[in-house]
Length: 105
Image 1 (tube, rainbow, N blue to C red):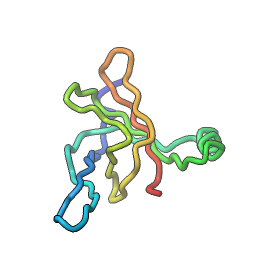
Image 2 (image 1 turned 180 degrees about the vertical axis):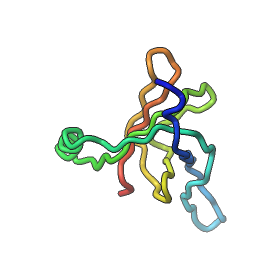
Image 3 (image 1 turned 90 degrees about the vertical axis):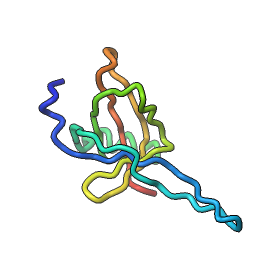
């Protein structure tokens, strides 16, 4: 992949639990902003996701980072929308991360 395709800015959000002594509140805070290639999921993949009862809508490709271990505990903010991370794949050459996201439930 050519780095020039990473033309959109996304923000990775990390889950935080705030305990005020009486109750705990879960929130998500910005962790890191990165450049990404953004694409919408194809209709065929949407149908497969619907069969699995998931609402997958977008895919992001970012540079791989050893310091960034993403999983479904994180979220992606893109274009003012927060998306749940459904799956993360690392390329064989360990240069790229492909993040599949779904609409917030």
